Length: 245
Image (cartoon, rainbow, N blue to C red; front, top):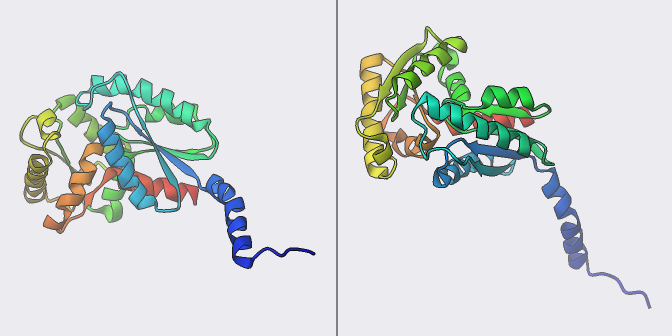
């Protein structure tokens, strides 16, 4: 006597058989945190996952041998080497469709783009500029890092990307950046104050939150302002998804 498989069981068996294939077809976006703060990596990756939904899997990687907060051009230069190495390693893994460099100065981005082919390579700083400058609006940057060399690099980046006329400069938060990142309430308050100053003093119609670790705080304080706070990690994730689609 021939036994027939129950329809529900047959459907379940089919689902289980095809699940690995479906998972394999989901593209991966690797988010590389150029600093050594694993908690910040998780926070940025979770934000990227919220943007990506089921369109891509977000894989997180954290740099090593660098500070937990990158505050100087020297820090960025040191971080770039690790970013390039991690990026080249992950780009060779099956299913990886894009890489995001998740520090506002995009350390290692040019090197990685030169070394890697066949996948998209995005920097959160670059994509934040593109989003903030949309429709020709004037924009400013709020950051917690007061280093003059780093601030000058922001101006040069705006110029390089063709946004010199729209760029209205940088407003820096009050207080020690290394202490601010340890206290979410203090960080939110300092950022809100800096955003208010950027709007009032610079006439900014959009504010870039200048730093990957500032993404979550930006979302927490957005409701206080009518102008958009451009979240760099979200901007880069949207660009990566557009490249995959």
